[in-house]
Image 1 (tube, rainbow, N blue to C red):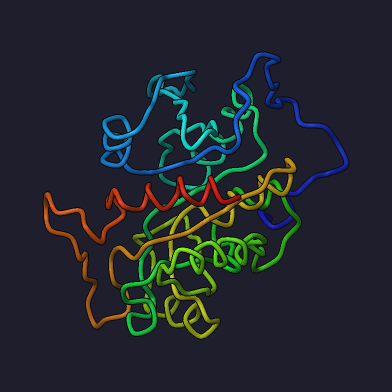
Image 2 (cartoon, rainbow, N blue to C red; image 1 turned 180 degrees about the horizontal axis):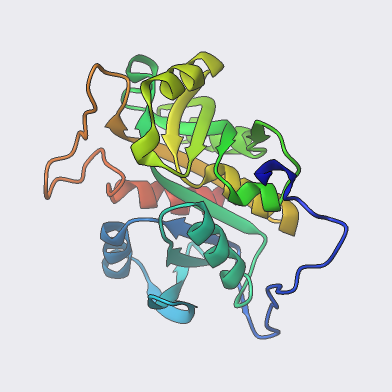
Amino acid sequence: MIIDSFDNKSEAKINPKPKENGLKCDACIVTFSNIIEDYVLKKYNVEKCSSYKMVTGTFPIYRINYNGKIFAFYKTFLGAPASVGILEDVTEVIDTKKFVVFGGAGCLDREIVHGKIMIPTESYRDEGTSYHYASATDYIKIKNSNIVANFMESKKLPYILGKNWTTDAFYRETENNITKRKEDGCISVEMECSAMQAVCDFRGLELYYFLTSGDLLDAPEWDERHVEGEYAGTQHDTRHFDIAIELANYI
């Protein structure tokens, strides 16, 4: 069974191999949004420093000079297997222990989440990737959630701490499963968090994660809550990168 997949008794056939000349940086910032990537290239002091490769193409990794610090930045792909595999590849060319990751999530509790940044404290492991990096449990602890919350507090940004649900199948977020996760205390649902935490724990990396509300599932019918070309308040809201880079500076 998938929950029996974690093997820490034998070596993997393939492992990331960090290069000696990898970019040393204070932290690496990760987005899922092409809109945010374009914004960063226009606003910040950015230069391409490396790249990662997939069968779909080669994608840039950037260096950002900010407040006397050096940060790496790249756009990743949707879903646990892709985002984890890319992070593993990036560690070959980027020398840092800290990863700031932010993205959008479905809202499971519109009353308490409205207008707030969501900080996962635990994530339900409804994906397959994490079981190759950590022994089986229903939830994985997002261990730096309090640090992220302290940062939000220091900047007077509205936020809420709560459980998250990581799924592999957004078209199978059924009524019964939504009810179960809400009864657990989950306030959000997305596709990467539990796996990203598992790989970071396994590799000795530190993950700093926050989410912003995208579509609404806490309603009689699904509400996409997005108007074409309007990005404020969505996962493409460029202000979220401004928060992410300040968080990277804070940690």
